[in-house]
Length: 89
Image 1: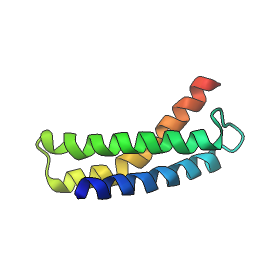
Image 2: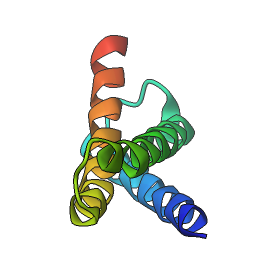
Image 3: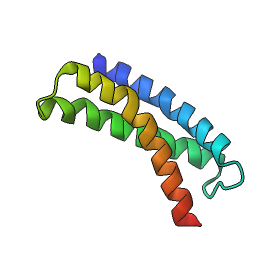
């Protein structure tokens, strides 16, 4: 059940980061608006699931797992959007 809640939360965070990325880089949209949203959602879910399973396997506490899942996927989505823009330039 926790993984389903995590996926729903990451979907919402991905949508939010896609919107923020579109606002930050208004003039440069190599994939279009739908591409921004899709890429942000995919990267957010990938980083969120990676954090959810890898951080405890490394021996960190649940507190670190929740901190990582709360912060890292959003920053990772923005980083992926930035990298795509630099590569397409």
